[in-house]
Amino acid sequence: MLRPGGKWRNWGRSQSAHPAYIARATSVADVVETLAFARDRGLPVKPIGAGHSFTAIAATDGVQLDIAAIDGVLAVDGDLVTLGAGTHLYQLPALLGANGLALTNMGDIDRQTIAGAVSTGTHGTGARFGGIATQIVAMTLVTADGTILRIGPTENADLLPAARVGLGALGVLIDVTLRCVPEFVLHAVETPEPLEAVLDEWMTRAAAVDHFEFYWFAHTTSALTKTNTRMPAGTPTRRQNRLAAWVDDELLPNGLYPLICELGILAPALTPPLNRLSEKAVAAREVTDGWHAVFTSPRRVRFREMEYALPVENVPAAFRAVRALIEAKNWRISFPLEVRVSAADDNWLSTAHGRPTGYIAVHRYYRENPTEYFREIEAIMRDHDGRPHWGKMHGRRAADLRPAYPRFDDFLAVRDRLDPDRRFANEYLTTVLGR
Image (tube, rainbow, N blue to C red):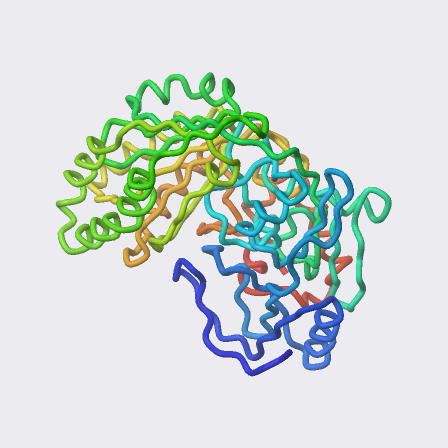
C-alpha cells in the first residue's frame, strides 16, 4: 500500500512535488491505516485524483494518497447514486446510464475524479444549474484522527455546506451520494457571431436557454457561441459524420492547434493572423447527442488556466477590460477565453455562493509563461468582485479571500474541528485559508 515517493507533476505541468511516500488505497481501511502511519511520523497527507488542478492544492512533501481504486457505483436508491470518490467523470455515462440516470450538469473536461471535481468547485454552464457539488446530498470523509464521518440529511447535516467544496482541507473524501436526473440528450448549436453583439446581449442570452457559453480568440471580432438545449431520452440523435466529427474534435483542436501554439512561441507575430484565419475557418454545426458526448470534449493539448467567478452582470464589463488590456499590452495570445454562467448556490466556498455567477477563463499554452498575463487580468477580475476557481491558477491569499466569502470563517471553524493539527494542510491551503 505504501512505497517511497518520487517526483509528481500535475496534468498542466504548472505544479510539481516530491512526496516522501505514496499510498494507494483500495478501501476505507487503507485510508485509515495511511492516516495512522502519517500521524505516527508527523507527516501531512494529501489525497490525489487525476492531477487536473492547476494550483498546488494536491501537492505535498509528506504522504500522497491515491484514491483512484475506490471507484464505481456503491449504491443506487432511486435517483440517488453513491459513487466511490476515485470514480473518474468519464466513467459516469456507463455507470449512471445503466440505471437510466445522468449528472445534472458538468464541465467540458471529464478526466477528473469526482472527489477532485467537487472539492475544487468544478462547474459546467447554465443559468439554472449549479456546479457538480450542488448535486451532493451525502458524503463520507475520513478525518485526521481516523474517524469515518458520514455527512448527510440525517447525520452531521450542518457540515454539508462546508464539505461539498472542501478543498481537501477537512478529510479524505471516500464517497459521494449524488441526486441524479433521468438520462437526457442535448441539442447543441455552435455558431460564430459578432463578439460585441454577444456581449451586449449577455444577460438575455445566458438566461434564455438551458446552457450557454462562448469562446473568443484574441485578435478577432467573433465569438463562438455554444447553446445546448435539454431533450428527453429517446429523442432521435443527429451526429456529425465520422470525418466531420474527427476534423472538428480531433484534427483541429488536438492535431493542428498545438502546431499553432508552437508557432506562436517561435514567431509571436504570427499569432494574430493565425487566430483570424481560424476565425474564418470555424463553421456552424448542430448535433443532438447524449448528455456526456455534448458537454465534454477531448482536451489533449496541455495548457495552464486561471478562471474567475463574477456576479453575472459584471461579465461584459470585465471581458471588455480584458480585451482592452490584451490590445494595450500588445500580447500575442493563442489560447481562447471561455465565458460561462452558473446558478447561485449555498456551499460556503463555492465560487457561486450566494449569487448568480458568470465565469471568465483565460489560458496559456503550457510552454508559455502565464505569469504577467494572469497577474494583470486577475487585477481586473478583483475590480469586478471576482472569486478565483480553487483548482485554477491565481494569486489570492486568505486575507483578501475572506471578504469575498461571507461564510469563510464558518468554514475555518469546521476545519479547526475536523483537522486541528492540519494533517491535510499544504502550502496552497495555508496560503488561501491561513494556518
